[in-house]
Length: 178
Image 1 (cartoon, rainbow, N blue to C red):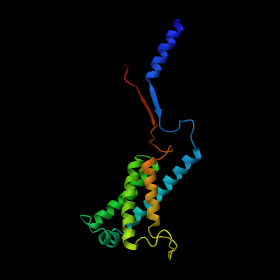
Image 2 (cartoon, rainbow, N blue to C red):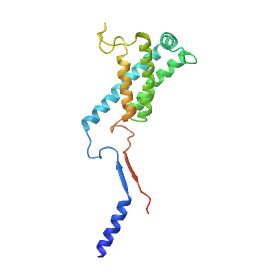
Image 3 (tube, rainbow, N blue to C red):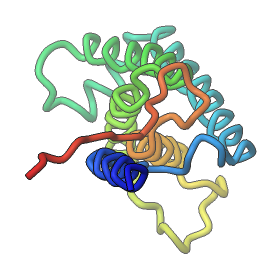
Image 4 (cartoon, rainbow, N blue to C red):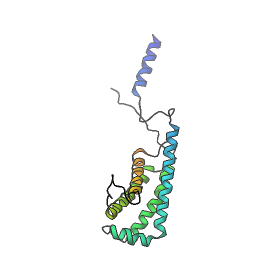
């Protein structure tokens, strides 16, 4: 009888603790999927750094022919906006590639891609998207659209398990007793 009393007390204590696991437990990891996410994250980050360095190589030209011409509604000097875009495309990929502040980094990269899409749509329009066969076999806005989609994915999904700062997605709480 004493054993059932101890068992009953133990059951009461265990029933007060509730754990909620938002994603699969640690033992069930799709390593191929996680490696794919890692490769996408790092290769995308390298491409973004390239675009940032490209802007820094000729900030005056980008400021005059892109920012000044298509984004005249932005306050201040177009060169300042060029440097902001370039720094965003250099710093944010570091955060995304390492998984440190990956969602915030993705938000920064997504914002630059929204501006890039705006530029392309104003400059060339939809070019008959989605059914037209264009001269260069690619829509001018394709790359920016793909980059925006990848940024949006990492903004929503996070960096994956292969990152420096990874949350466990386990929440433990203790409901109030009666």
